[in-house]
Length: 403
Image (cartoon, rainbow, N blue to C red; front, side, top):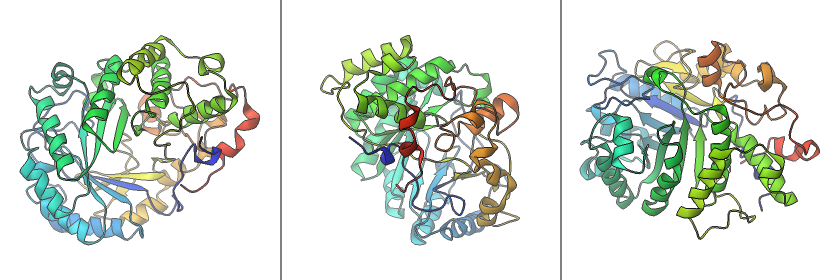
């Protein structure tokens, strides 16, 4: 059973000084038109994208945060739409960056292209899978064949020795398909299954979202599912609260349904989870495979657009500056926006009153999307501050400690 201090992992360095992960949108060009696309990607590249020299200067700035340097992710759009992608990956690897690439599931996701990425020095790959079948996944991606290309690329990446992360965006279209997607992740093999919770930005503004109550149920399902595969959440920061609550209940031998409000969505997902992983004892006290990391928008996380504009997150459209005008290190450390997001005492509403605020913080992107205020309460969290029945046991879980 994990010790309390390991329920939530913390970076070994000060996140006020440097980020844990830097994501660079190398291009917005993509041949897909996915329903949820944050970037509102389009087929052609923007003429003012960071050019090769500017891209290398950006990578130099990222490396200057270290050692160890932040994780560096090249995303899009589709990175394969940049003809200099392989040269940029090679440069990043040469200066010591742990480079990951997040390509789209298109015909360019071939064994040969992935082999070139691996040879250039990329160490990890993230692929999106939003359904366990072609009908579910391709319907969401709005292009027939994406499911097959993605699975073929996934198998090739595993053969080539990449660390593979599978990204799934959770919406009503795949809510009850999540256990089947987990089954695929388990069967085909991945370092991490990352669950993205919809933030209505970009084309995602037109999509329906799961309800706050369903959101809570899914987070509890993920706590159980982590006993099957290693997973994490994106824009689901209150998963860290759920982990702490569940670990305290496990230590006391109390079923979660006796102390927490769990709905029908959780019960159905749990039933399906037990069906796809009958070998796992979900009621036992087996440890999580991957406890969540204490990182949030602007606090350990930074996003650079294809034009060089710096944001706390790709889902939070508040600019803090441009790498064409100021160094990334200066923007991250000194921007008033970033500094405010790193201060849990600045949070408002229920988040500001919540005892979990320092290790959760809620989705700043979702708060901004709902209210226009990045410091407002997380609108998709159902927890009422102070309502967890074992308040006197929380302190060791909430105290920061290194990962």
